Image (cartoon, rainbow, N blue to C red; front, side, top):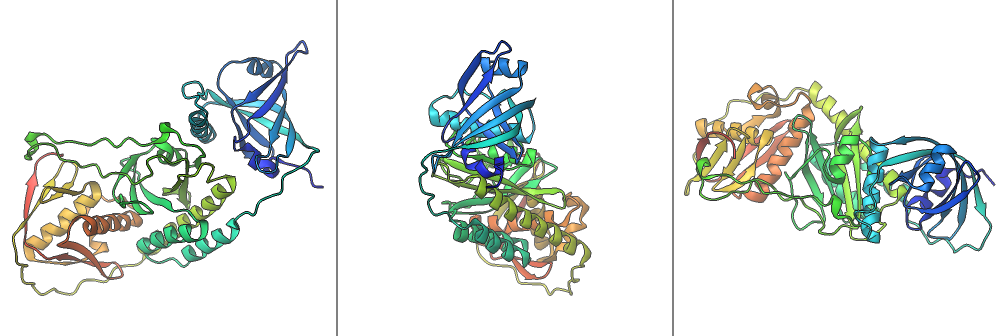
Length: 450
């Protein structure tokens, strides 16, 4: 039989069955207690939760050797691990991963306010021994390797960013059986993530934002590491504060410029995986479920692999877009103005917010792009545009990398499709699109921001 490693027993580290740890004081007095959390680090290391200064902690600092007992929640197999304490981490990806998971365990066991992570104690696994005993049979498991392959093969075909995102979410639903998922892109300058595509929710939430460092998605982006929670926790449910305007902004009462984030009211399993390509963080692939323990280490590995393929595809698309020149537009004939009652389009320069007939549309870079398009349309009834002309327009303050523009155009196109029936963006070729306006518009420039 091959030597057991931490890889072999990762299922025991989910926290479903509490682990037991035995330590010894310098005078030889033993101490045995239950442990809240054991976290897989790699094949030779695990991390144990340090929550308060206990007898276990006192013993370990004086004598770094410990014995750990783990139980497989499926088969009932028992394993004993010989450990040596190395160090304690109080920040970084591993600490944040354990902090998020511990919050779920605390909520699940009614120990909120008691379970508070002070540090992640790193131990070297010196030996693992299986304890003889009767085992329960292994239930059938889904073939995650086949699901991963199917998703990656579709992404390897490349294509337009919007198509890749829609295909990815469809494949995750079909091959992994994950019904609720979304992709959020990083706005590096603003240190926020914005929803670009989603599946399984009552509304798409396209354009909704999450600050980097907030909640499971924001922490995964900040630490550039997967964050997984297997039990419901209120600590990682996002607050969606409503921004309000004052009467000085020119509108009566309050107006909402916060797009609601799609999400389950009480998710019992969550997994956020960074999308990284060429060393750069593009965004987050996020999945959630109403089932407890829906995502384990294997699902985390599988979706991390899919996210890596998506990051590679984004990086390759950005390189091709940066090297390829858009076709120049031929002279456009003047088009007849649309008929019907005019629609009021307001632009707030402070944050680039756009309102159409008192209905909030978008803000930020996507808002600046829309204002440029609609102004040029109104000035000369021009409707055809290229990605290239937007990319070189200094007034839009676009980030240097080309996929930022494509992501903003997808965001704008989808928000218009959801919120406005008479203005839309239609692709007309590679790097080309049309602003389709089917009602007269009246443009109003407002000072400041909302």
